[in-house]
Length: 466
Image (cartoon, rainbow, N blue to C red; front, side):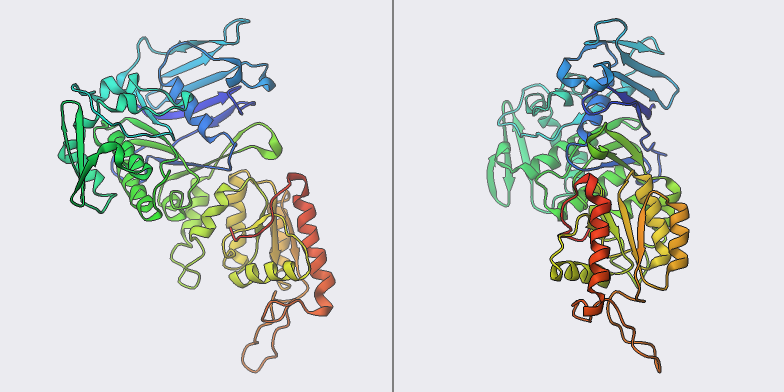
């Protein structure tokens, strides 16, 4: 049994400077223990990382054309896999021919247990099946690899006969909730769904996603590794949640690594429950970088999961932050998110960046979320605090000197009824979110200060709450 312990990459596609990736390793008993979730914006390098892992898993020398190599490293690529059993395999050029990557192994032969099964984002279901059937041992090394980015249904056709097994059906029906029956004989495969029979290829792309994933899991031996690029493609959110539950369960015995663009596949409960979160990003169009959320930070955030006063704190909106290039605005509460957006609209200021969820649930929680953003490599973060939080702001500036903040002059962003027998609290805006005349200059200055802080990165307008 051998899992990926560390993967190093430089010079491949968007990766310039050497980066290290440390995926989660299954403990053979705990759900999520072997689950690694890779997030980040488009064009950051998520697929590139998975393609490189898939390529190195072959443990053989290779030719790598110029278009796959980074000019910032003089087109020299270095890829290295370190396994949990201490053995390793490295690919790098040994002479002036930088296109030829020569493999160097710490062991004498390829260990079948190290075969990594990669599933790319382009999935098609076959019209027919092969008379024979691929065992997992013969299929994994023979299928198309992720770098080609083409569908692998041509090899999948010989896997279809296995799909009639009870174990496959059990895993499949843990995700789908409708009748599904398949019969394969010779070169034909028919599927009965809700009383109608048709070819396997008659299913939509969402069903293809489920079938590819279940096929990768159902006969995977303990100790194997499965890599999936965007497991959520064309899949309804309710099925995404079910698929995530299946992946969490299976990751106790299989190392599962996937890249995603869906907040349903990268939810805080899963991350705080033991899965590892990794963000790939390209700051200001530079080299791709790999950032990993520390276990300590995840544990601290996990304490907020059962906050009955802020049940929305770690909801889907708060997971959307994983897919931003940068530019995150933190405020204390949900009404702050609404009010600052309204005030920006009233003043005609197009606010750059995006709000984190529905606020952080109070100023005292801000340091934990700032630490998470710091772990994940966000460089442009702006925190807005109420007027009685100057002491908290001072601590934030000391702990996070690269991030910016502003303490407003009022005790609250919006007018608020005061405690019993005390006067009402005056905010920057009234209860409808309209800016008080005497506060317009301050609010304008604040919003422009945020825009100036995010200007160099060219962030989009804050039209949604993330």
